[in-house]
Image (cartoon, rainbow, N blue to C red; front, top):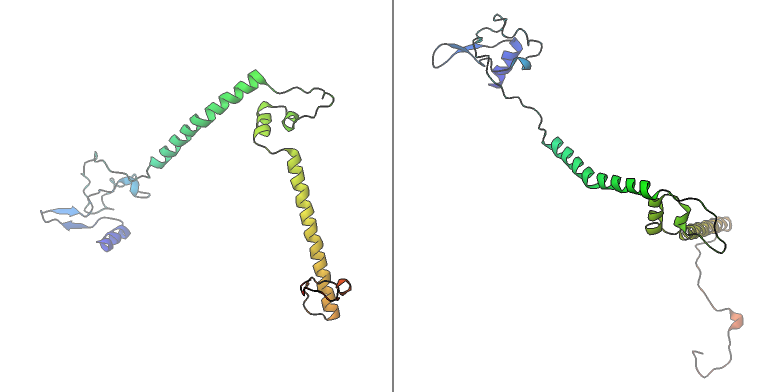
Length: 199
């Protein structure tokens, strides 16, 4: 069946055959829409010689079912986008507009004596001040963490330099692997007789 159909398409026409009901009919009865025939949209029903045995008296009002990609996921995505914008974007826009209109940015003023400003007071916008005051760590804490990390990395760098120097001296002097066992110096050991051997 498939081989015959491909052979018919390569020959450019429909092969007529005898129907059990009698009479000559074409194999496809022109059930393929003209839109599916490349380059032959205008002449598919006007050139009977090209399609021998084709039934050109087929009803022109025949409706075909077109296989198109579904639009379900596109509509679902657009509906979700509209829902999320309505639940988040619209309230956020209302709140930001209210803050900018009725509160406004802070004004710069002189710092009184014996007063240390908070971290959030260095910002002018109310939303930024709220975020820094409630969600951000203090600047002093961040600075000390950074200094501690720099000091830790510096100590590791010094230990790596010492390790390289030890490896160099081992190769230079032909020493073996090194290890350290803490021991009491002989100068401080008391060899006098004792009542308890563990003393």
